[in-house]
Length: 437
Image (tube, rainbow, N blue to C red):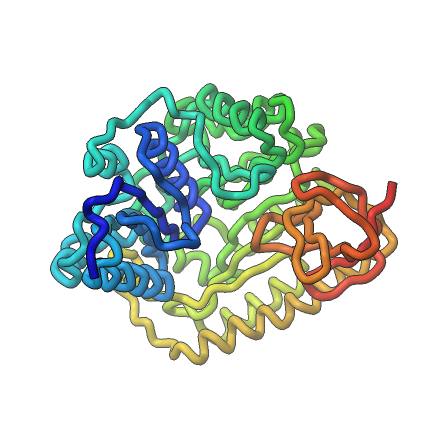
């Protein structure tokens, strides 16, 4: 097959992994287009002749998906369908030397902080004037705002510091400029992300400064929802709760990965907190912001987890009744503290434990949702699908949380707009309702 080498360069960016990776891809897209290079994200057609794969290297399943995606595009290159394959992101940062040997047909490998080097492959310059003018690939009404890069936490299971480096906060002025730019282009919801939101500001302001950032973002005209994801419990800055309680456009929502409910396991995981302190923190959060929805993430089957530890986690989940909860099975990762421990729990036991937790959470979620029947909530509508307009309340983050379904036959709502919805039915992870004036 004839290659596309004679054609004008067109780039397709493929993103794997988390929302932080998505923001990186959006920055690549912004810089390429700012240099008059035809670029798109997750193109549906196959007319691009250069593909950039932005990889995830967090756990085994994510790494395998990244490798499979790279191999698929390398095969397309060898068949003459595309000309170049470039790879960036966490997997490339973590295993670059090994990958170069194993997949030699990739044209270049880049780490997580090498955007200028990627641009050089296109004879393009990094344009600092584009900072704050990021193009987004999400629906216009919702955008992720990455407030920091990297992480200083010593968690036993996590290789993020290896892939992303030390924590580096962005300054408030730069973030406000970006938020204003997004709002001018129709963004109504900002989802604040970082490896650890609650560490924000320590490196550049000498104090945890998330509360000041929230106040400034809250004042940006056009921003109706600000949502917090990835808050670390140890050293949690309680002053952000006061801001959350007093500002109507800061969602009563907190994503705080707690990882376990056993003090013994929290010590092994190097989380810097006990179960007792965790429960005290959650009680304080709920007392200061009574209507808050707390989302958490847990790990089942971490090296060293005993049946007693797992039973404590079960008890923790049943007692705390989180609004939202997800579970990962432990992945034994190189270059982590826990890698020196024996990964002795069989995968099927890890999965059984994860399934047990999710079954408990399913019942808790149903209780929470049934209690919402008869109430009216402000809902932001994301899409239309299967005869329903589908949206979210302030208590739900995009893609990972509950959704509100409104029958399209009965009413019409414009995507990206808010509407008041009265809930008339509920399932474990979905609410059903009708638009009311």
